[in-house]
Length: 121
Image (tube, rainbow, N blue to C red; front, side, top):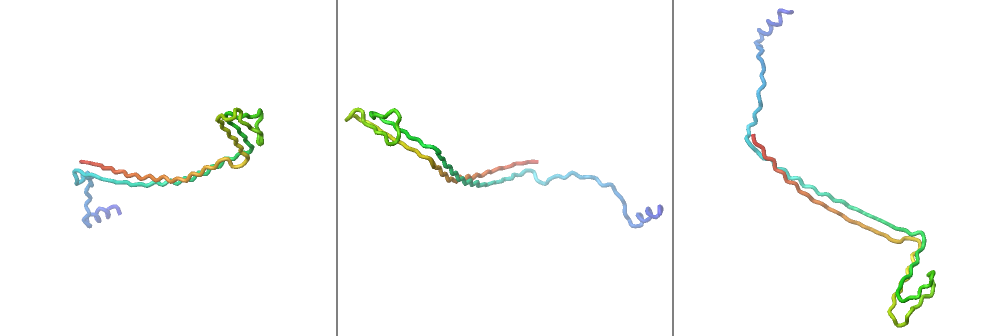
């Protein structure tokens, strides 16, 4: 078997030649690439805020008003100097919803990015 292999190679005409690597050379000298990217972002926000009070609040304020030492609902208030200007404010806040805030907003952002790459050999 040893002697048959070289004979078969010569008989079939196969001749082995060394293989060498060749460098690849591009066939262009310069070029440009232009790219455009467009994007749209849409953010939808819904904010619901409810503030509650659990107690009561009673406030009395004024000018030229006689306010007793411990003001309370149903107290008798009187003008100190008759005929003079006066101001009076009475506020009562009971337990429950004190304030509601509802915000619905949509924010849309559009952006475009253009880029150019220039290359030469």
